[in-house]
Image 1 (cartoon, rainbow, N blue to C red):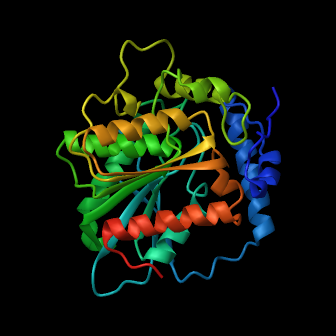
Image 2 (cartoon, rainbow, N blue to C red; image 1 turned 120 degrees about the vertical axis):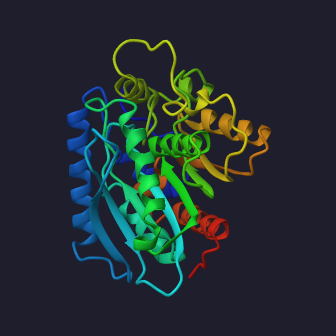
Length: 324
């Protein structure tokens, strides 16, 4: 089934929607290569010179728990000042199957540039080669490392936020739940952008959007099969599917963004309402006329710029950073 550009899409997003590749996540290697090819083309169009944003950007590997390989991360920071700054630990999207440190490079740079927050982007292990709990463990171990190395990173360990897009939104919820449950490093804020939440796939939007640009229900089926492993698990951990968390109380404030033409829309909205019911401070922002990943597909559109402006403002308020 070909990708269908939905009626009612924001006019600035129509061309980007038409250019979205119809990736088949049933073939992970092919999907990864198609995305790498798209990224190379995008980078060539933008030019290969490093952005003149005044940031210090460092790739390194950090230690994981015993028996797991080191975790690649990319650190975005302004030149060090006298006072420690907040930190955002960020997890890219890609259905737990695709993505790397380049996937959200532009967003991470902009957040670091505009807010002065040090951003640590995590290149977690991917399914199906590494099913749950590998990605979750990598992301939680990155949180532990960031907090333990706050001095070296010149960050304030009391002002560590976590965030992510799509599957990275699920990992954001998982890491924050685990931090609460395991008495781990404190998280001051969660930034969840069109997040993956529910493995059951029974919502109206999941049933309706099986050919939408950016993401569709057919790939959602492949995603959960790859991430949860073969067979039908008798129970699913809330650190895999946040919908399974019975208790959402005691979590840090949340900014949760959903978009109209996205199979993940209704599960994100439902999770936001559950957080509110648990008396968690929630800013729930639904964007009409947009598709999953619209801001990465059309970053110069007015709707994408407004979304990023709001994300930076929310993070600045949550962490005490100063916008520029």
